[in-house]
Amino acid sequence: MFNGMTREDLTKMGMFPPDYLCPTISTKLSDPRAAPARANPTDAGADLFSVNKHVIYPNEMHMVDTGVSVKIPLGYVGLVYSRSGMGKLRISLANSVGVIDSDYRGLIKVMIVNEGDDPYEIHPFITKIAQLVVTPIILPRFVVSQESDEKWLNTSRGANGFGSTN
Image 1 (cartoon, helix red, strand yellow):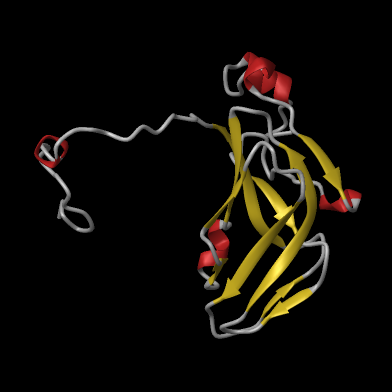
Image 2 (image 1 turned 90 degrees about the horizontal axis):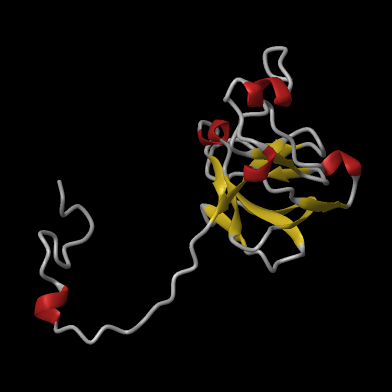
């Protein structure tokens, strides 16, 4: 429910995509309480929880098991992001974003790092530790270019990288 409306209500109002644009993601759970959940039906990310208690002390990191395995359809990717509220606590994912390819079937585990000054407590099935976003992906072919460096770099930016557009 979202403001008292069902998914069907939101779809009729054009606020929720029709079912054919929303793939079904099969999940396996080590515990039913581990199921990914959205706070609101229109949220991009589904919250992930820990199945175990953890205390992560400052400057430490822990691998946290979510108890969730997903079957991402071909043509999609699962992206595991930090939750925005974790930033103010200086808690983050060690690798910034986790990638779940369509052929991975193992448990989703999240490496969490505490860059803050206080211990961070994770309570099983209560603390939201990350969010899973599933999105379409383009799988391009990569080919080696035979262009000369002069032609390759012939853009307004060329090879200028970090900070070059400031």
